[in-house]
Each structure stands twice: as structure tokens, then as C-alpha cells.
Length: 135
Ligand code: FES
Image 1 (tube, rainbow, N blue to C red):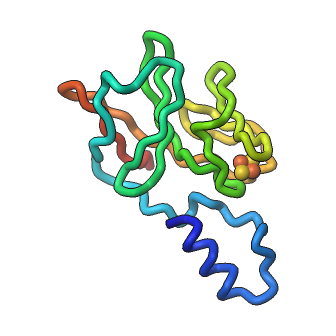
Image 2: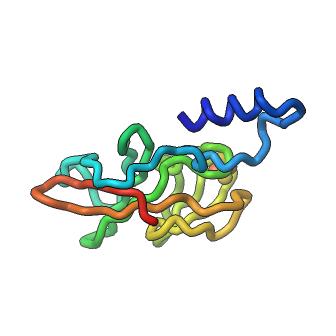
């Protein structure tokens, strides 16, 4: 969906460079209510895992014997796949241009991205993982 919105923006704004820095997560329709995304047994510790929450890609991360965090799987810079990024401590580095985000809350550590990755609340109930957009 994000790419389609970006394509429409480029088409609607003559002269806009298609590579312009549109926040690639700005138009995601993130779920405000809990959405079931995965069986808990399918989430391995310290393995970035991409799931879909109402059609929106989300990166799940479980620390070793720790809690589970969730942020957008789409890099806000130019849409890189954060689940394919490099993990170091509590951060993920985008594989495309090297922006770094905190896995705990999506905070931008450094660019080229100029905005943080949206974060999600995570709930585990009856062996199922659910997420919802964090305010
Ligand atoms: S797409 Fe992630 S840093 Fe550019």
C-alpha cells in the first residue's frame, strides 16, 4: 500500500523526484486495535521476523529470554526491509542505506532517514502474539 500511495504522490506532484524522501510509513493504515499476527512458538529469539498486521508489515523482535518488541518492517526512508537489517544490541540497521532504529520503540538513532519507525504494542495471550499501533 505504501508504494502505491508514494506512486500517487509522485504522479500528482509534477516535478517531484520519485526518490524524494517521502516517509514510507506515513500512509500505512496501522491497526489501532489488537491484531493477531503469529503463534508464539513460531517466533525465535533474536531472529527478526516479518508479519502482517491488517496488511501492514511489522517487524517482531524477541530478545533472548526477554520481551517482544514490534516496529514497522518498512524503513521510513525509502522503504527498505528492516527485517533483513543487521541487529546490534537493541537496534536494527536498514540494509539499504544504513539508517539505524531502536527496536524497542522505533526511535531514529541516525539517518539518512529523518523520522522514526512507527512502534507497536505487543501482547501475548494463549500462545498467540498480537500487535496494535502505539500512540
Ligand atoms: S531505505 Fe532504509 S535507510 Fe534508506
